[in-house]
Image (cartoon, rainbow, N blue to C red; front, side, top):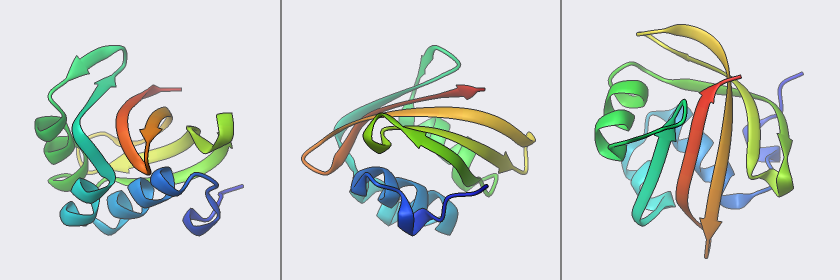
Length: 107
């Protein structure tokens, strides 16, 4: 059962998912803290390069199935034009309403 984006409990995570699904680069940048970092399948990646390739250029979209850890951990079906759809896990670190780090990978 999918959780509506508006019902996600953590405001920063809600803004992150909303920006991804709207393909809104400005809103996405606005939710990230300066110097934010990320990893994919356990390897640190260049955030700007990864998000451009895996989200914006390939029309990424998240459908959240479950949230835990106060809304900082998600289980989602993620799809994009490059890889199709896969079950993914996302973990976020947030401070002052901004995402400081996110980690994603196959679930």
